[in-house]
Length: 362
Ligand SMILES: Nc1ncnc2c1ncn2[C@@H]1O[C@H](COP(=O)(O)OP(=O)(O)OP(=O)(O)O)[C@@H](O)[C@H]1O
Image (cartoon, rainbow, N blue to C red):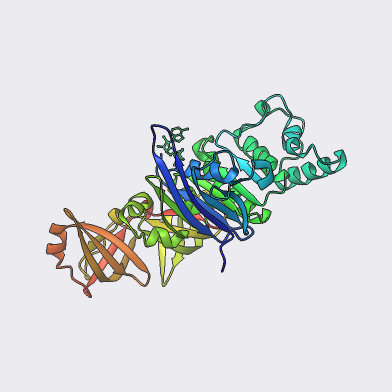
């Protein structure tokens, strides 16, 4: 398939770093790619260049074959000609305008009746009815975020760009809005790029992941693939969870949930959110290995596994396991000797219910 979005750019900052980003992305309607990486990786710079707010020294940006920027050909489309919807960290709503006026802000070229109709349907879609005449200061953080999203969508963008869209919210609201935002982005049907440095947000929001570090794009692929199969150390470090598996919640009782993953039913802490389709995320450090006939422990989850590979990492050893699904553990060299770990050997993997993070996918 021909990628709809092609980015090859070099942006130099005076006395600062040079960002050299290359990526190709399908940008199909409703699909979400997360620009993910540590602080200073260059994520916002890529977003600003896509929006037309920053001009790269060298390179090109093509969207469905249309050059938005081509430094060799001297092409640079201003932001309004790119038809991108933008939402930045602090929402930047105009404080002196009502929610409705904020949403209609970029629509002055349209007749009043059409402006009203567009904002009316967006207020309905984003569950903001009744708040049209409020000023930004009279709205909660979550409501401001949705008004800003409505404003970004009002221009009927070809591409939506969100920079840390949840970072201004407190932790509980963030968690709630992560799932909601994903559902909304699906509904809008606009291809979306989201910047975040938060792993759970990347997993919750993204279909695809663009992993950035040190001003470079390190890996691009479906989100679970990049988390499970990082191609280089920098990506492995930033993804952290080495096991990310699709699962389905079967039951919830007394604060615990039972999740079907491959052939197993895992016990995890019950997630606050509704929705039964989840990603099950586990860090290698939280998985303990024991002999196949190990006596039961207090850990809720006990899986018979086979060792697939052993990779020394300094004082530790990374152990890839087959538990009916791929699972990764990290043990000390001492434990490796003690357990006689070797490729093909059976072992028991255990982990506690609180070690598992669930990220909603529906
Ligand atoms: N206007 C500027 N002048 C000089 N250096 C800059 C400028 N803008 C960004 N940089 C530098 O470029 C690098 C990439 O910045 P960028 O904001 O793109 O990173 P980021 O991945 O979005 O980080 P964060 O998650 O902290 O927002 C950083 O080292 C930053 O200090």
